[in-house]
Length: 82
Image (cartoon, rainbow, N blue to C red):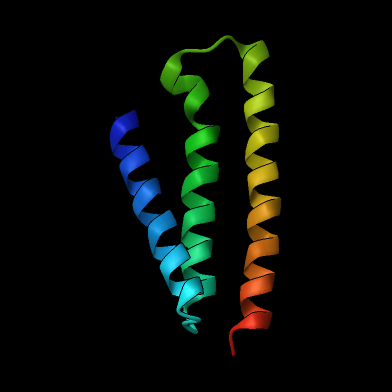
């Protein structure tokens, strides 16, 4: 399951990179898809890998950091591509 999720995440990242490089007006949407897929994958690593409860807190913080960086990338794409 983890390999499949990584494949989806890699495809979303490639689509986001290509749309932003080509300055497509849908780049922000591709970055949103990539951000959501990456953050949810990191969030779900705890149950997927059967990590102890103490270790799962840092995964939540990591997911929120990904969402913050993704939000900044979405903001940039909306301003740069018109």
